[in-house]
Image 1 (cartoon, one colour):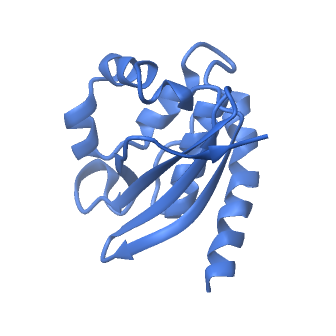
Image 2 (cartoon, rainbow, N blue to C red; image 1 turned 90 degrees about the vertical axis):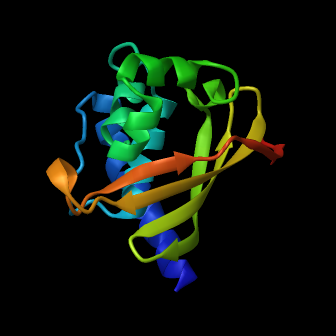
Length: 155
């Protein structure tokens, strides 16, 4: 079962990496699986300024859960948070790896390992939840991302 989950994440990364680079925003819909949500966001952040400045931040914001938006938004405030200390290494990072961690009724947690531009590997707990009402009903969206923890040294 773990191998199947890892395979799903890898396929998701391949499918959505091209979209992130072409500049077409992907919007939440119920057909996008939890790991795919994170892959879409991470690919956007990895190529943040392609095809235009902060396109990746806008892509990440598109999948921020309404409760997350209420705490971190509006978009300009969210962008400032990502560009500030602690999360700035997400922007234009070298690589990332998504690993399923925990799940419950309507939520899933993934461990995200990200190699920053400086070669440090950081770990984040990334939690997505299925929206239960409103415009994004039945869509998986990000409710929380932990502060980064040093996980090692990359290539």
